[in-house]
Length: 112
Length: 109
Image 1 (cartoon, rainbow over the protein chains, first blue to last red):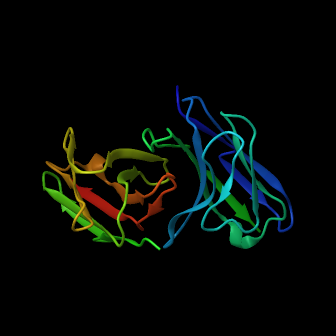
Image 2 (cartoon, chains in turn purple, blue):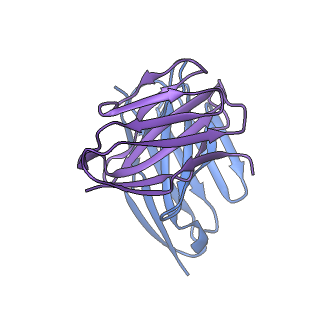
């Protein structure tokens, strides 16, 4: 099925560990995004990539890095996980004009 | 900074009722999304609007650009409509979204 695929779906990390969340889309979208969702806060943008080869910070980038590996893939890396990064993470993609906004199924991350 | 406010935060209805969820934003936007999120589930875009009105099945979305306000209506509500409905906006030449905090809708049979 066409869409946005995120892995893993669940992850538990210890404080200080690192990990990479993977995201791939097969809709030939130019733009890709990483959001986090926290209770009472709504969804907030971490990083985005308007096109292959470019990345920019969003509202809450601290503690994260991203890589736009190619047009299909956009990964999010936590270098040294902290409990404040416990959240649900969503990857999304869209066409260049914002149409076709599609979200992945989410990654539930717990940092202990 | 663009603020996005939704009301109500929580809404409980009986099956068959007409539902309205409201969204207001503070500065001019390029377009607005209505999103649906079922408990523990993913997020689905229902509509993207830049003007006027759109309809899909029992769902209707309207936007008033001058008043910076949008509404999502559900006609003949059903328990399967129970979900969180989220309003999200973007402006300018990039398409990163700013989200409202969502409206939790519960439709009882």
